[in-house]
Amino acid sequence: GESVGLHLPTLSVQEGDNSIINCAYSNSASDYFIWYKQESGKGPQFIIDIRSNMDKRQGQRVTVLLNKTVKHLSLQIAATQPGDSAVYFCAENVYGQNFVFGPGTRLSVLP
Amino acid sequence: EADIYQTPRYLVIGTGKKITLECSQTMGHDKMYWYQQDPGMELHLIHYSYGVNSTEKGDLSSESTVSRIRTEHFPLTLESARPSHTSQYLCASSRATNEKLFFGSGTQLSVL
Image (cartoon, rainbow over all chains, first blue to last red; front, side, top):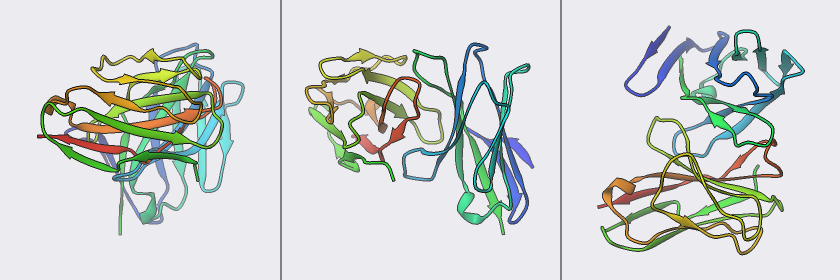
């Protein structure tokens, strides 16, 4: 289930299930989006990106969906594994400006 | 694996000390950034640079300063550390403004 914790919303999923992490972005002019994964005590790590001329992009076990109409971005992780437990950030970019990061979602994978 | 390095990894110091957090990248990226992140919270941009001799303030006001004398090096300095500076500091670089960021492992700073 999904809940709002003290700092971050948390998504708990069973190992092997699919995970969907959502992000509402703020700027309708944003044309480039990235998902980052941050494990405890580490810096954010690039997962997948998508530009605004696409609405879907797939990687290894991950898919990013972009809905520009409602300014929504989602990250789908197939067959979630314990190693997927981390905080996930979306980031949006308008050409010529710096990235803006979302608040993050903590993914907990239950055995 | 990103070629961007931050030192020290952890730093515990007393109030009033001057500190410098080091960041180096070997990718030849022009754009470099410093973010501040409290545990479980979002990233806040405090400084960035377009290239050598360029430094800009970010969205979050910070008492720190930065310099960019060489492309590969972007150190952050606090002249007089205070407990309110306790946080994680993340350095990042990118080839251009609208290209993906590569992050270092961060420096966890604790000011007593």
